[in-house]
Length: 150
Image (cartoon, rainbow, N blue to C red; front, side):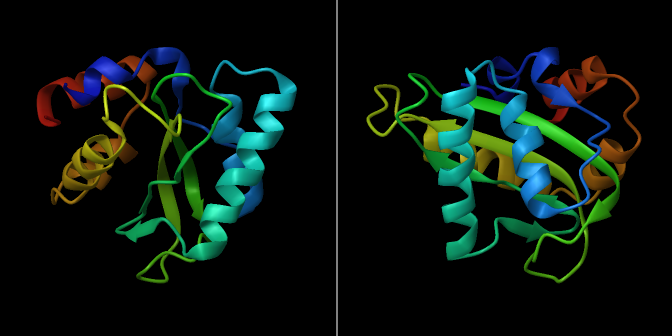
């Protein structure tokens, strides 16, 4: 499975308006097509995950992720915060790019960890942060994934 198969333009926000880590997580959750109760549960689950250790992997990228009963299939979203925010990343630098991954606890396709690995691998490519920063439309994000992510 390629990453491009898991994203659509409607789960991509290139202009997050959040000013804090919590607001950012809420905005990412809002990209998923969930009802208000499910969004609240998912936000709390992601917040608990972040309290265990930041998902900021460095180089301006974070991959907030969790398993939750509020989804019945693997779901992903991407958000970009121009200017970045403090996210307690491993390198203590601001985070600009957020890849959200949510999967049900018992996922038949068992793609949660492989997808997490694929995003981390994609994010580690030298020019990816600059390429993500230069995107102007959600469709350009999808094109980048198609061209560069496995």
